[in-house]
Image (cartoon, rainbow, N blue to C red):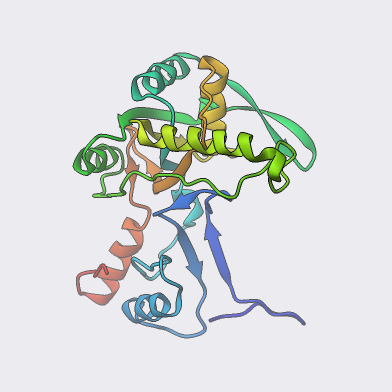
Length: 264
């Protein structure tokens, strides 16, 4: 690893377009500065071995010219919304897409901030949790150009709490039990899955902002938390699809090495 200069040197690591807190991701990108030339295949293998299970290095390539962050102009999000019927979610999504602007509010360190969530949404489609995995994968692939598969997520209830957010006591037992029954019923019924392409803008429009926009236009209120997973990042082409951000880097590496690029 290469390190910064000064009294407190730090490894030169840069996460480009990191996912927001609370979101899952299948497509994160990181730039590493190295002190010496290392075979990308060896680097990927060694990093993957050192990282904990579930955090996998899919590919490494030598960085070509230009900024990686400038190639990450949009993300494809899969948002599982348990408790919301697929048709109801589809109708709400159509209402949202029909609007030219949908203002939502987000709490920041400087207080509430108004954000136009609609302006960042390029396209959105709704599927059912009953859809077979191939259908879900095909929908994401249509948007991203990648073959990506993720099984529908089933949220689980954590420890019961009262309305103040404190651990439930005996007096809260009935409320907690009813809430648990609601959670189980919500995740057992077919629910909607929103697949959306969202531009990287300032301020960032997050998956929860998209859900807030659905709440504004159609009063969509999931009874249990939704799960957001980033499926892909890249640059938007003229058709609104995401282009692999490492294509240019692979081309440079291939030209310099004279051998085909490899993918793990």
